[in-house]
Length: 496
Image (cartoon, rainbow, N blue to C red; front, side):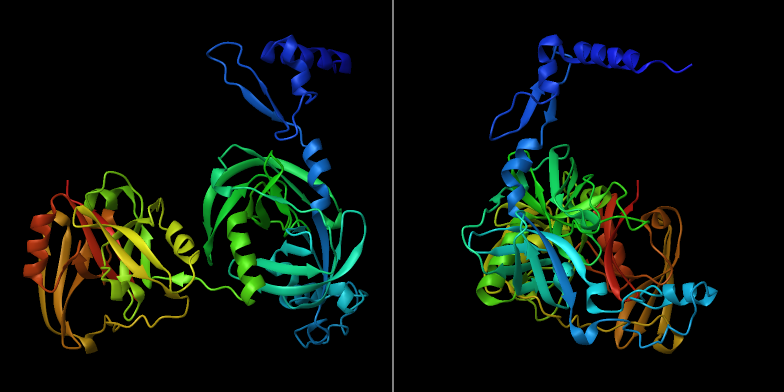
C-alpha cells in the first residue's frame, strides 16, 4: 500500500532537521542570501560532518538575465535548401527509400516542409560584453549566415553585424546598434574548481530565458580537433539553442561559453563543454581590433607524459609535454629544442598535461618571446623561443618504407632482457634499427613489428652498438623514441 504524501513530507522534514539542525532549515530553502554570493552553507554539526553549499539561483537570474540574448541566423541565399543537388520530391510520403535518402543526404528537409532559408535557420544564444552592443556567441551558430537577428531579454530585436568568427575556438563576435545595454561581469575560469556550482541561461529548443544548473565536472578537457581550447566540462543541461550562451558562477560572473555536448541521441546526456571566458575574450579582442585571430606556434609534435615515461626520464611525477619531434625550420628548431625535451612550464606557469601546451602557447601572438622550462637529461633548464604564426609547417624527413625494395645489408640481433628481436637495415643510404619481434617487456611497452627505434632518451640509435650502449646507461626505465608509419612517439620500456 502506498504511504500518504503527508508521511513522506514528515520523513523529509525529519531528514532535514537531522542533517543540519532545526535552526538551519531556512538556509536549505535559500531564504538567506547576499548580493555577491547567492549560496548558503549548512554548518557542520561536528568535526566529522562536511559542510554543504546549497545554491539559490533566483537572484543570479534576476541580476544577470538581461545580459543574455537569443540569436536567429538565416543562411546565405545561394547556400539555402538541399545542398546535395538531388531532387527528393520524387519520393512520396511513406516511401521507404525516402528515409534511406534522408539519412544519406545532408540538410534534406522533411516532405511538405518549406524549403525556404527560414526553414534552415540557426538558433542559439549569446551575451552582451559591452554597453555599446558587442555580443559573444559560438561561431557555429552564425557561420555561413548573412541575416543575423538578436532579441534582447526585454523583447527588443536588432539586426546584428558579424565582426568576425574563429572556427578553431568556436567563438564569434557580433555588433548591434544599441547603447546603454546591460553587460556581463567577466569571471576567472582559472579559479573554477571541480564540484563548484554553475548555471546556464539560454534558449534550448527555442525556449528563451531557460535556466539550468549543475556543477563543474572537470577542467582543461581536450577534445578531438580542438587543440586551442581547454574546455570546462559540466553536468549543466545544455541542448540545441543553448549554444553561445553564458556559463555563470555563483557570483553572477561569466566563466565560459556553452559550446558542445557529448551525446548519442542529439540531446543532453549529462556531459557538456564550455569555452573558458578568458580564451573567448582574447579571441573577441583580436576579432574586434584586426578581424582575425593569430596564435603563436612552437613547431613541435608532443605527447602526454605517462607515469612510466616520467620514471624513465627521471621525473618525480607525470606532467608536462614530451617533445616527440621538432619540425625543421620552426621556432623550436631555431631555439635549440630537442626531441626528448619535456616542457614543464611556459613563462613560469606549469604545464600540467600535454594538452595545456598548445593552449598556453596559442594565447600569445606571433612574434612574442616565451620562456620555456625544459627537463633535459635529468636537469631543468630555461630556453627562450620567439613564436611564429600558426601555419602548416613542413614536417620534413623521409618516410622509410618497410618493404624489401628499400632494404639491403640486413643483420639480425636480439636484446633478450627486453624481449626484443631487431634488424639493422640500410635504406636510402641510412642505417636503421627496426623491430622484428616484441615479447615480454617490449610487448608490454607497446612495441610492434616494423617499429623503427630512433633514440633512447636523447641518444640517437644508429646501429646495434649505439642501441646496446644507450640501454646500458638508461637503467631499468628506458624511454624509447620510435617511428611507426608517419608518426614518432616515445614508449616507456620497463626492464625490472
